[in-house]
Length: 385
Image 1 (cartoon, rainbow, N blue to C red):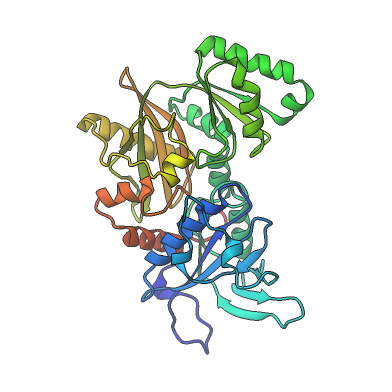
Image 2 (image 1 turned 180 degrees about the horizontal axis):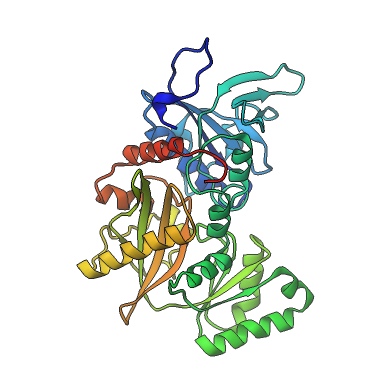
């Protein structure tokens, strides 16, 4: 569907496409999602699109929020929240689950519901569970509303690091060693689960990285140097996800590459490198968002290495049947091989995030990137495709 051919009722004049920017959510990445939304709202071309900001609170309420990007930034090392931006503490936004009706309704207790107009496309900038993992995408499919980014299956696979790695392996992409501790394993027999991890460390060595299997933004990850820190690391990961992924350290340079969907298919950006720093043991949440540790763009790679990581990034995009955008993260080992760590189907999208920076270095500005993603979503139909 193109913006020139939006469905119009007979008595409705031609209008600009209405973009609902949905953000916040119930995951531990709520605050970063709000920051991302502020950047997207600031960048959307208001001469081309009408914009409707919708925030999802930490308890799952869909709230009508202020269209005020300046209030959606990190201040004093603290991320903002939807609760701070909501126009009401009780009102809720409802998206009808009816493909024939895209009209969004706002209702407050004791008041007559108010129609907010039809939504032509949703730009979901949620990170983590209940938004990036296929749940919101399923709702939008039922509603028949096009949306930016990958579909239900691709979003779910891209969120679950275990199954992501299984898919990559089946397509011949190299992944690092890992072991998964499922919820029942840890709750029923911690000693047996712990032994699995210790045996894994005996085979692959310390340190290990213990992380939630279905979370992002490096939240809940602990670098474990020996057995003494293992239980605490597992419990920290389980605070965010009952399923835990334990990875062996892959020694090499951290290289990232963006993939963007164009009309003729996906293309890769110039890659970036995340350099090691003395202030952070690894590229954690604070390094990414609070201290804004800079990446090196473009990465200092040979032409052959650049071409190879771009090829692998597109291959990962295709392997998971992604749409719209992906950031693919790799290690370049001392032996000169690329090991894929993960993909992110809705990567950090603030102007200082690596994904926009890589496309900026590839010749596409942040506002142009936002526009390309909206246009790609408008071209796609919902349902099987």
